[in-house]
Image (cartoon, rainbow over the protein chains, first blue to last red):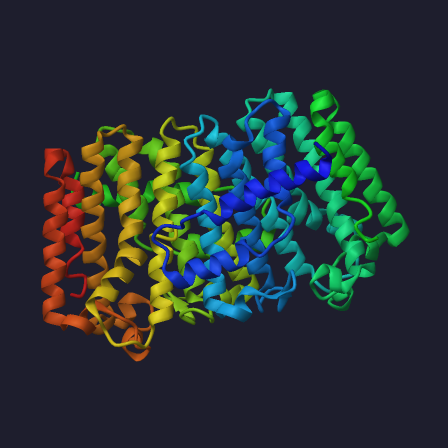
Length: 288
Length: 288
């Protein structure tokens, strides 16, 4: 199977399982708001990483599906809350009005809360023998030392002079943590060894850094219609980005360096790493 | 030990453990905001229920401490988000300015998100053999079929005519679910039998309903200085309350009925239920 076909197959599995979530007991308005953001497209990168990492270590992708869905729910919650008027105040996301524009602020806050909570609910109910350590990995990545640290720095430091140390901390928290956790969780579910899981974390970290630096470059140089969101906003709002610190040329080199480091981290997996290696290489050059 | 002394001892255990939470990796501002709400007093009812239920079934309270702290974090998160301008727009809570008044809306949203996520992090890292089913109980109660269902109905139905069916659904979600889960979790951690856990859930449900009906009555008839928050707000804002549907006299009778049902639910535990029975009886008459 080609890389593209394999990505498509993983993505379809994630998409179908997300779509089938009953969200039992949710009032209609809440379920609608959750589904609006959860099923609004996107690459499903975090879900695909979960399934692919599980298979790389000899596990079954099916067993990792609740965790793939959970990390997509955590990602969706973070976007809803990020977009709120009190945060980034974004009105468009993936070519559609953001949650609070459609449902109002109160329901957008609740839909985010609900997606975060539901992620833990489906992981806890997965009945997988390794569910607890895999869930712990996700909680840590989404938590105060991970995504929420990055988000807090991003919000509180807006408008300060670009400093590479701060941008690194923000990118590590906001992006790399939630690309690392699905890789580690997938490996844990597959019963991988400790050093394999650690190699997976290295891969996820460098992939995440490459991905976010590329994202910063896209905001600067990308095609607005293709991206489905307002571009140039980072600069206009004084957001701390990688190219703002080191310039676009160095940023491109840094992204390439992180992709190489990601690829190297997977050497212990041999042939079975080929899909994730292709995935890392595909991170670059989304600007064309 | 008297009931009061025992309650105080449980409460102190919860308070000290909450106070000692490192929240490793959290940026200072985020940790400050989390601690501001988490350590702002309160009865620690949910934490005490966790410990007492665990001991009632022969478990050690210490083993349930991460779960007692987790449910207090979930409760604290729900109050922060409830108080936001887009939700209830409350500026005072327990005699202190609310989180968004002190830290701004963005950080208040993040502090709530962080407390919710941290709750799952500490439960997942508790290394208790029954951690997963106990965590699942908490996730379900906090989730779309529990607390968030109640909160959604509360927000979306504000101003509609009082209807006992709706108020019941709101109170079951917003209050009873998060008093039921710590009881069930405490029993699960103690290795209780299925029918004991089910009895515990019945107890928690009726305790929660009694507690919330009393809370509605307090808002109507209580002493503002004693409560540390604005009273009469429910009525002024058209909130759906129990006395608004059935009148204060019937509401008092209903609260008493729920306390009796709570007490009866614990009959299978014999003598060891005496603390929780006293706790249920103490729910009534906080108005004096």
